[in-house]
Image (cartoon, rainbow, N blue to C red):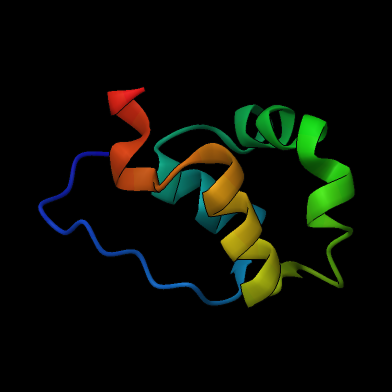
Length: 69
């Protein structure tokens, strides 16, 4: 994702919103999350909780820095 802001707020997000933040399709993000399912836990309803989002950012790296890997 190309952005001038390196700050991404940790708050509840849906899978589609997280995919948009990372600049990928929802299906791709879902595949990226599979190896981390145990650490992340199941979504309750449509959204990942703020704690789950924090874990996702820790496991996948910050969205703005995703291209740097």
